[in-house]
Length: 112
Length: 112
Image (tube, rainbow over the protein chains, first blue to last red):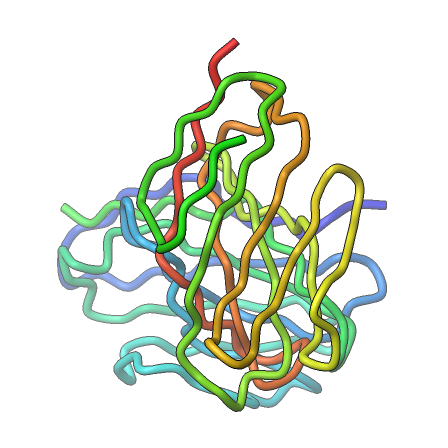
């Protein structure tokens, strides 16, 4: 049973570019959340998707958008990249509410 | 064993000692609490969770204590091993499966 998988593992982009990160949830999970973790900091909640809808959103600008597909996988898109967007982007999945969230290994994004 | 009363960013213990990592949470309405372990270059790994209707929960070598009166959460690790060396984060949410708010991490270093 595969856990949460994310791709790519590492990515380097230039300021102003756009990036798409991908996440496949753990088998049987239908809810996907995205977090940004700057180096040496705690993860910060970006948004959560359930039934292909954004259910909750953290304090991130509209440059951050997402999508969930019918198979529950999800994408995180970031437009107009800034140097400050460099971070580890984590995807977590859970089975609806009242269950624990499991994290993937993350995508390390570097913006130069 | 080594223990701390307030959150400290680092904790160093000897192999075989008991470790206690503390966390103060912010929202008195939080109903669900979880501890994660994060090793270098990896995503957070679920350790143990607890709901607000409990004050103690035990797992394998780990115990979580919840004090709602002072909004304090602690993780106790028995017989700490070198493999326990990592950054530990507490997180809270209004309900399991919803957005997690992470506390500042504590880096646990175990020497043999």
